[in-house]
Image 1: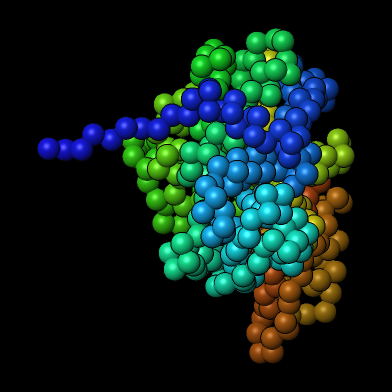
Image 2 (image 1 turned 180 degrees about the vertical axis):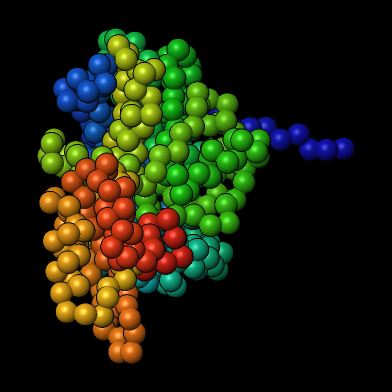
Length: 421
């Protein structure tokens, strides 16, 4: 006889208990109107600023709620987590506040800035272990310690208490506004936040449409919902690291499948545009996952006109060393940055001819790699060009071809392009 499987759905009662549990450590973050986005989309846009938490992300909610629920024996044995990001910081701070020893496994290539942040929050209550090259390596090492030493693993999303902790964001949103909310946009990685928040809205504000937003290169929830089963992706783009997982949670998937109005995937380049826009125009620093919800607005521009819309800004732990890549991806997405193989005749004055007669008045060379070859008619160079307007591309290519400088266009050749970006 087949065993019946009961799907877990968090209860409002348990979520309210979680809210009471975390109230001393988790800030009630602002629900701030965005005048700029409201004007741009002819809607009432509110930003739920989870980037203003002490650990600069919502992850403290779930981590603290989970670790608070441990028995005396489990607390004595200690906890373990695997994370190179926001979850590690949430666990570290929770360990210090609850005086519970924790082991935090991170991949060896984790930037030192992230390691230092985790140390700062956890102090003497945590031990950081840099293991392997990838998250999977760190995860397997963490699970091995759990099994050998009877420690409790603190999962970043596939855990009931974690889901209930993240769900407290929804209670706050509903308390912070008197007007009915038409849309809520939230980033989806493993699905903990989406599962918790959507449950609250389904019960307390059922007309609100919850839109889950994933990176285009890591659409694990979108694919799973389409396939009607939790599906692991073979390969993902890890740039939006706070929301890039190969497989969503077995607990979170059925909740999200039942509760979310829709899933949307957003190109990584669009997210980079949003990061730069928020910094330059609003002085708001967000990490890539934190910009996902706002990046979705362009794709819903018609539907949200005149509506009350909330975007959950999930975190701001952005690594400053990634700024150059963020700018590059934003320019590529806007069709303003292009890479070519340019064939230069092996004669004096060829480079001058290219600059004066082929480049437009507003075109800028941002990358140039050339080695002169002997006994050849032409020498090839890899050239990166930034345009003032996307419409300048076709005329540029036409001029290159007319004067026999055109070799190849590299933006649409991913195997080669990965070495440039």
